[in-house]
Length: 335
Image 1 (tube, rainbow, N blue to C red):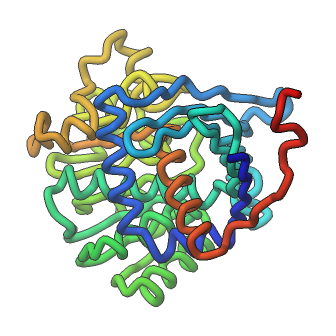
Image 2 (image 1 turned 120 degrees about the vertical axis):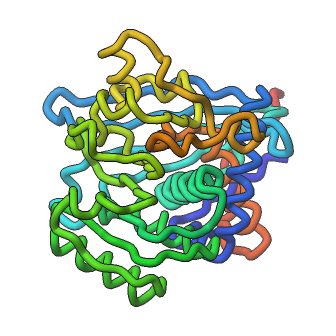
């Protein structure tokens, strides 16, 4: 009754690597469960530091019903300066709680889980918004861990690209990522030093940077027929958001923390530029508008971490990759 398991990052990544298609389906099902109201997903809590304004640690508590019936919290840090030392900016832990008793029953290294649910969400959105699994040209802005995971999930879902164009401020990171896409994942890829050159003519665009404020400012940057996966959330100016068809994962959650949609709401005083949610697209209640660029902005829901975390834990226990901690709780009886 009071089991407690620990799953480390190496085991989590191995499990994710061999079950990516299943994770996409877990994310799909979770979005629909959340849309149906069988979840609790409070606002994230941001811990910030006076002497490190670009750094933060975020708590994402949540409850997911449906087949899971699990609660929990992800505690994830984002320290962008880490990348200057070649260290990933994000680190995280996920604690899962039993819904019947409230007792925690597992702790998982969650940077892998967080990256996987983000990537699965992006790839699922690309499929739903484009209606297929092909793109003539994919542009990827940002050559970090999230971008790598997104390309791995695209590959697992058997997407076909005419070419992949990578742009990053660091030519070293961008070139290394390009070689990985071309050599390991098997997609024809090249590195592009100019941002505008990377974006122009791409029918599918992934924004996966550490940007804290918009740097894509020209309202003419994106054109009709382009699908933009705004994964890093803060790359795009409000003027661009206003003129696009905007699809979010959860409207109230995304309209916080100075995301690009939130900045547009503050600038224009309304939310009329929001078309709806990805779940509505999945349910056939909303369609991509071919007359405008389509921008998908996912704030990243804690319920997705619960679903993917529960998936990883189940496989870790089945394969013996979970570490069971005996007598984790000092007292399990009142008297």
